[in-house]
Image 1 (cartoon, helix red, strand yellow):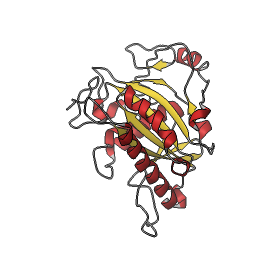
Image 2: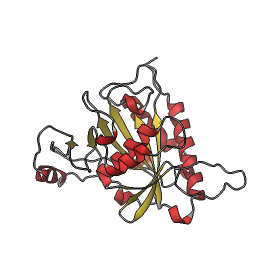
Image 3: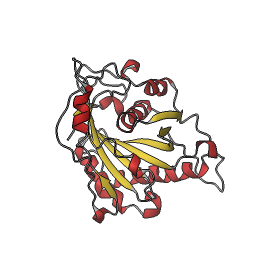
Length: 269
């Protein structure tokens, strides 16, 4: 499995290119009625990209660069990767890509989700070359009809020539027991229904070809719960949404407020 992170010394970018060339074998599980893609690569490369705007804060491992082929696939998809943070790293404006910095600066529509939305973009930018088009307050929608919901999408990005809507959530509960399967189910259904609502209302100028539901989780148990629960949601609700699950380590700043230092988790109740 490939792992790319910042280091103190500049290494040749060709090292990363050679390692990436062998990373490309998606694996599926028809029993889940989902296209489950995982990166089945080998080797490990460390490349210093500290001055490179395409770098990412933290260390990303698992599936990376696999979303573009799924954009025009009519089936729902589940993709998993991981993002690890260590002591000494900092979530600051200068640690982000140029578009990530722009998103960092733009007030969101409310709540405490700025960190997760920014890091969602950074993952998509790092792995799939996503470009930021609009934040959640900039996307244009028609008014809800017939009492329909007024859900909005968090980010509008571009993969090449395709516009993609990205809805971001955190499947997290600050207790030792964590989230139950029922809680995970309710969260996924709520977000997937919201995706359908925002997709039906977005105006032509911002219309996307597909949406990604990006779910951040802090434990393997929650990641496994999503894999169990997602196939039980009815097909109409899942539609053709790509569900991207990123498991964090040392990423408590994504979930709780005030932000703990990178390398730390949220305190549990």
